[in-house]
Length: 404
View 1 (cartoon, rainbow, N blue to C red):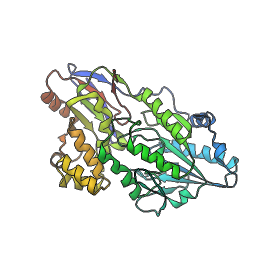
View 2: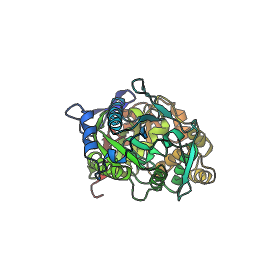
View 3: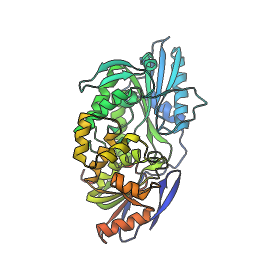
View 4: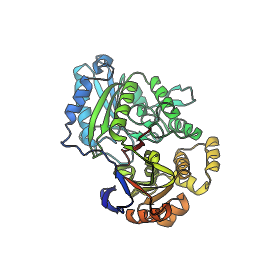
């Protein structure tokens, strides 16, 4: 059987022996083009919990819309146009759009935006959480009486899901705040999609309370480059509703744990190793202990984070790295710790453009030039009777066991 997997801006083939093939799981392809206007208007007219946007508006005040650029550009542009029109009609004097810094730059010539950068902007401390995180907020964002988050609900290795609480940490806050929040991961990484006992998530929600009421419009991806639904309302209600709906749509049930899981990190997270390794958490529930995950990620931008590379070079053992991060935490090192914990649970083969010796010696990953080569290596290691699960959209798909 031959399949095609996303790889950078293109696709690559992978051949899976028929005797070893178990299943392929991916989102259903949309049957029609997305009507973004209808999706946004429907969400705003039918908010979760009944909270209408106009109830948060005082005429003459200023509004700030914070955008996660993981949302397809044409989608967030249409959403901000609709929101701006509604805000103006309700009496908002000025609306400013803030764009969260992400991996890739976004062409925003049609709509003027202000880029949020945790390393460059000045910040105002607005409080401290019970877990000790000093909450810094961009002063221009802080001055907006009405704050609206336009987000994308996606699985996240640290917070369980995105789609709401990141409006403050990390979107509008400083390196100091982000580092303190992420340092909570040294106490243990949550399971995929865990929101009930997630310290990073709880800390992020508490940080949002210092910023005042925040209205949220959160999209669900369709898995094929656009969006499928949206939810609007207060930040916590929208987050929980969107996360629940995401689980219904993108968490296919599997009857067994596979010996080998082949997954693509997608064209966004697969752009560098720092982000690609984080999506491995999405398939951990579907691979047996000590099995093999084949991660297909082009890594055209290389490693992606200097600290991530430095920690990989300087700390070979997980316990040693964990002790260092508890004493002197630095952003980037937490992803290295995450990777080391994943490697204690399964083997990870990487299909990328990175030099093979570098991948093997620095990160303890097993490199392969092609996905088909990686499968043959994995079968030799796992056994001729091993079963293979294929997850082409590994950035959005989280397969879980039938009994879960």
